[in-house]
Image (cartoon, rainbow, N blue to C red; front, side, top):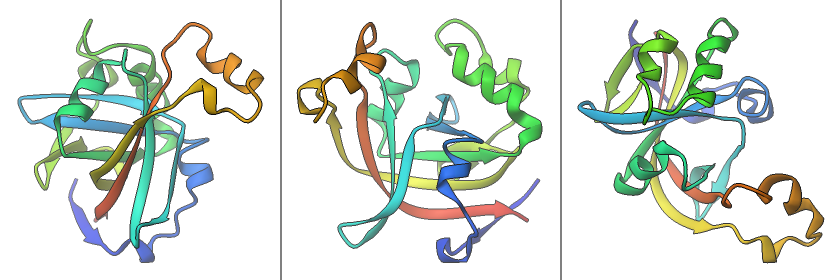
Length: 168
């Protein structure tokens, strides 16, 4: 499939639905070495006079090292027909298997950033800021308990949206 670059303001995009319910793939690395993971947490908006996306990645995820080492990453949004692929990419580690092949996804390189041909929308992001979340900063500490009893806290990445591509 081919993609066309579009202005983000032309999207009829609901982040509550697209991120929280449909999920997205967060992908970083280069065409020789990259990884992706499914995410259902994130935001989009305006910060520092820029259109931004925010995502959260635990340091024990394989994708973390790719996000840390690269300036850019992509967010790929796929249709409901790819729910099984999203489940595979969210439950298996690229350390242990070729989950992209197992999920039946086709990697594509757009603006030197990896994404997936099956996506309806691809957002290219350039990192601006990262910070480790702290359980000490929860207003109600009990809210942290459900998410951070066993696993490390997430690293928050705020990134400028530098390009948006939609299926042509």
